[in-house]
Length: 313
Image 1 (cartoon, rainbow, N blue to C red):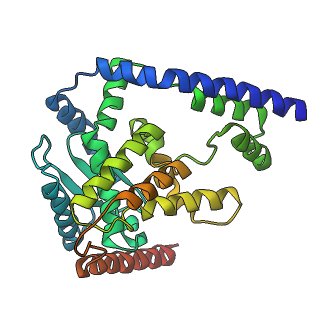
Image 2: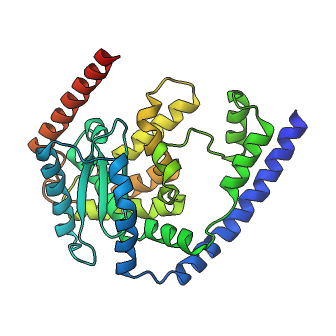
């Protein structure tokens, strides 16, 4: 068994080196080929949005939607992003799990349970700014374009890892899966429903790091506290760590969030470093009465919804 694990480790290192050595080049080549126009981005979103809205319907609470539009609008105006070149929309989705995602050309979705889970408006703003940064960097647009035109992106580590996972470990052998994950850095957690269905939403580590950097800057420009902007991603990292240690978390609430925004020490460390070197004058925004009211309304709604479902069972 030791010899087998050693062989796996060496093989994984080869895969890792190969993916690191080719991933940047592949990404660069893909970006060079992708001369995407604004009209193409808008068309891609128009085609996918009806399906997204079926899976992620807008919350019926108009005050909640208006609050999301206000906070999003504040960020957009502070960063001179309105019609530059996108017209942004912000939607609170009425689903049962925590997540946020964006579509090309300015479409941002935040799920209601995410609002219930964050501790302040600055933390919520950090999530929104992260999604805006995915849009301005055209991350989803590039993946959708690549899929449409049959362009291959990135390295092979994830595919190789998942193949080895199925080859070496039995389906329910958690100890084996955990050893493989620790040996080769393979993510073997359950993939969220959204990223499983809409694979173009799976961001690379490089994309996430870039969205974190730019999103942090957007939030700072909008006046939010540097010490609270990145807290949501620290929470995701905490959830992921706890999962590996076998603690019971409500995994279904976090599955999509972890899949679309894979947590890492590097991401959290980058955010912490940016906070250290960033100076803020005046009194940065931590939270607001509007946020507290919005979060309270979501929590009440979720509680009543859970009680109703329980009664119906």
